[in-house]
Image (tube, rainbow, N blue to C red; front, side, top):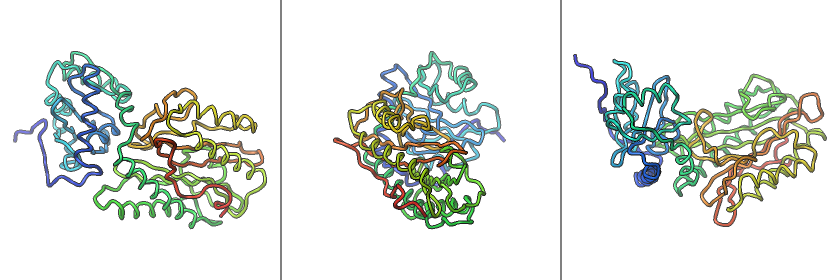
Length: 400
């Protein structure tokens, strides 16, 4: 039996994708403009976020390489044989499947599309040194150019269709938030509360998006000391009266992440905790009021810093105040140039989607110890910002 290095396995019919063919064609047109501006004849994209953005296919690596090769006339997903026809069904372009019967068949498939001796655009923030060596060897490249930053800039401004999906995601996150609030009680474990929120969101996603794939929706629900970090995993800790809680719901819809994050307390909140909570809520409201077109990320950051400094709380700030939304997950990319930090000078523009999420962490042993965080998602409009998060924040609603 002759075993091929790669082949086309167009199994079944194309699936209904989250966006129209015209949407993906427009994204590819933008990518080709980036390539032309940097003198690249072909692009070899390797990151989950860019492959998903430009093709609609979100890969599951499991130790195997995946790619999207884009030329002036073609766009081809390169996927592993273990996934059979699913990558082709779930992409808006052509697909080639490589086999694992011979080492480096992935690169042979890539080279089949690119041809030899081309100027190749890559993502230098994702392609590792071993991958770069393979690319240069198999493609006999004339040279490589880095388009990671340029593609991130393209992704920063969301299309109307993207904004509609993100808006739906924010509503799903609210559903998870309400389910979590209903599950909170003394004596229940963090994991039990988290599962209630996750199950509610997955059911809601399936109802809203019947043609989607369902994966990766999750909840971080933290209590007591576990609230000190924004990304602390769920544990089996049992909730007690007076505990500070951190509610974090993360629905994933076709590679698009949204989030709801709230501070809560079980039964009652002491005076020291209430003061910190109210201060963080005030910073949250200030930050949202500063978000409008023409203002830079650094300007917003300095404005909130000045507020916290005036309250003698800046030393308890945990991280930046917000970030871009779109094709995003806890294990793959986002537009790092659209974060609310002192070192980011990006100016907000209509169509950008960004969170406001100040957090204060008061160390254990001090009155009011714990992590306080509120998180809303805002779409930048022509003259301001629209808050698409609906779940209420603050003590009036969240002492359970």
